[in-house]
Length: 267
Image 1 (cartoon, rainbow, N blue to C red):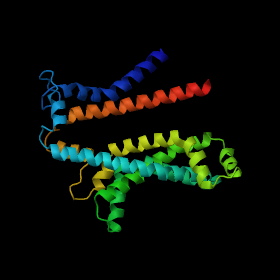
Image 2 (cartoon, rainbow, N blue to C red):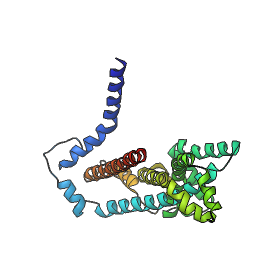
Image 3 (tube, one colour):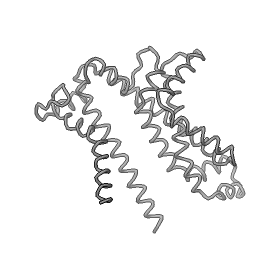
């Protein structure tokens, strides 16, 4: 009975998590402007999305472009800074290491709205004009701790003598970092990059408070503005479906590669 109820709980949890996404995906194949009103199977919304034959095409495409560009820049910079920070934290000892690790975890546990308001007040205090720069800086700020958290386990699993051996064999510290450490940390860096990219792509609160009043929109703020007008643009349904499927396929590929690498390591 315990096993039965445990399985029921897991399936119920999965249904609650994925039912809304499935609901949106199903109704992306109908022309109805009202979500939940099925008017017959149609791929017109997908056609409108790819051909640009829809109201507000320019603003939506600009929001998507801003979202992807900001996410790529933030994820790239966060991966670099997070990897360097993880190496530094790993080499610390005692209470200093525990304190820095604790401080690194705070931004991840902190509510997004507090982070957004805090960064907003900081930019106002420093007289920094809000726009692209402040949004990118804000995204780097809250994405970097996730990269640190992804890279640290790889450093813990690594043989601590490999780096010293490279130095003893004549490599400079930079060469040892580039040819020894980074290849070993690559899986953690890739995981951190994907996590940072996803977090940046998904963010609303931090972006909303740091974008200023210049009309900068990402996908999340565009959807928020669109919803306040009385309803979502129907073409958002196929776009959300495509994004979900893209991320799902990417995760499946990454997990298959990890499983194959683990199997090859055992053999």
